[in-house]
Image (cartoon, one colour):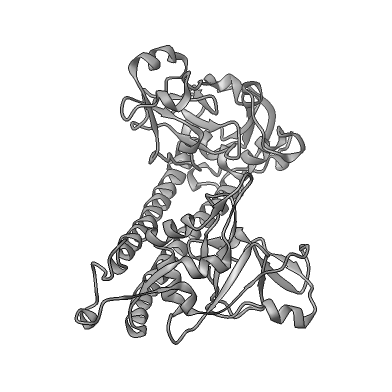
Length: 434
């Protein structure tokens, strides 16, 4: 085994067959590796990427113990041969070493073996008789591993890791290869459950996206491809200016916010997938009369009216019984609910068709894009059915949203369980005894 520093410790949770064995030891990673290094980006960058060939793994392809290969790039054989030092082997540990995703780690599998990494991904190839690569991967993404990665970042900002720092990582390991394998197998099984549950959530989201494309008319049409039986003989959907359905619109507050205050303030980051999350809220104290003038009501439609062209035009619905306001770059539309149901409106405006229409209403400038709310109300044309059909569509999508949320909660519970388990399976370095 690799050189240790004479210190031992014991995890809070240990498999029964190893409870009578010696304590764990802290070892430096470098002597237990055969390779620590990264690659480069081909001259010309993305222009040299191919639709097939050798996989070229970038930081976005390395997740938290999983590979994200939906957008993996490829390079040709000639380019690959010039990058022989960065060729990926089976069971290589891939660690992101720069940028916002620094610290993410995954194991190389058959899908990318024989490919290459770029300069933002480090290959850690271990000596398997000394260190189980799966255990190393799990340790790197554990709380203890992430603290060690953070310790190398100046001022707490995750800027980059060099190879010397990676080789100097201290890894706490059990005294036998068998215990390493037992822990790695346990966490791998849990990762497989998490992966399966994650795919289930994504499949439901994809199903909803496809269903929405069927439930709403396409460009230039006034009837959807899919209509519920009771409405198949109903009239075509009527087209109006969005303004015809708006009872009131207003901006949020431009006053400075803080971590404390009486009223929560929703910002662009709280607008997610047509809904709102209430994490990382900021707050503000306002005169009650001023607050009431911009207070959100249940069913209000929120539009992010200014930012980069990628982010401008996000739509969300407010569905909480909570005293709340928004930041000034969000405009609120309060609908005439006798004509346009908020849940239906939110679903409609979050279809690909209407997202594209809303983007087209943004006026790009040098630094950002902007949507003029008055022009938005007048220029956005929407096709809607009767209120009864709106309700039927909204109910269908709400039921699907509830199922997605339930499955997402299960996914979150599995991730929380793994995090807690890892805290018990890996001893805390603070508990090391000499």
